[in-house]
Length: 105
Image (cartoon, rainbow, N blue to C red):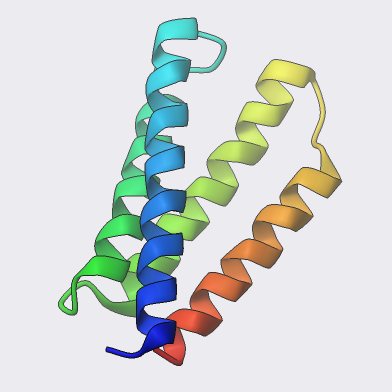
């Protein structure tokens, strides 16, 4: 595995773990619905799984990223009453970068 493979692995695992942690924190804070907290953790798990195993593949990575995007939009409306476009554009840019690196690893 080359440098890009290690980079996608590190970034994907960190991003996945951060989303899992966010889900756990939200379960404790109860600012969002329980299902949304679980979905954050599932999405984070799928992302981490996709970048550390060869069996999971691109479809699992995309599923994890899509789940995270949908849930974070829901959470923004639930917690703040609106979407934060800048936040979601940054997430989208990072997701595109992660998928691009995954494809070229």
